[in-house]
Length: 132
Image 1 (cartoon, rainbow, N blue to C red):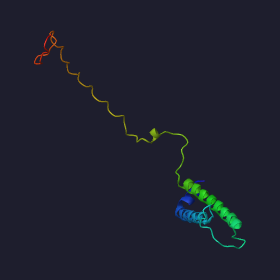
Image 2 (image 1 turned 30 degrees about the vertical axis):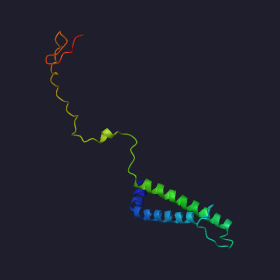
Image 3 (image 1 turned 90 degrees about the vertical axis):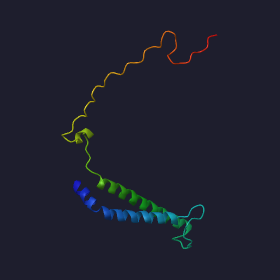
Image 4 (image 1 turned 120 degrees about the vertical axis):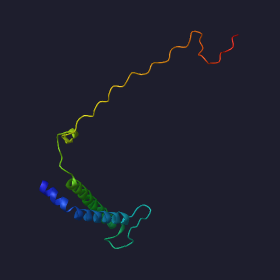
């Protein structure tokens, strides 16, 4: 399975070019289909490209191009993906020399809080309220 993945990985540019070509072809086929508003449908009158025949051919081409588009998308995504590990942790990828961060030093005690105001209820230097 890895040999196939490696082969497809080497041919990723070719797969991408084919994918872009299929995408362009699918866009053209979709734009050629007749919509309710008239669309860009071909106005030919022979049996192969009559309104009914055109719808069948363009619908089939759209389905074929869509299938190829999805298949190529899945194939390219699978071929580019790396090896899948079923078990393990992100912690397994840490370098061997790393250690836990150092803990901060204990802080000094907080400064003493100011004492309560004097018994009179006013603080020195504060204006006093008139008594009534």
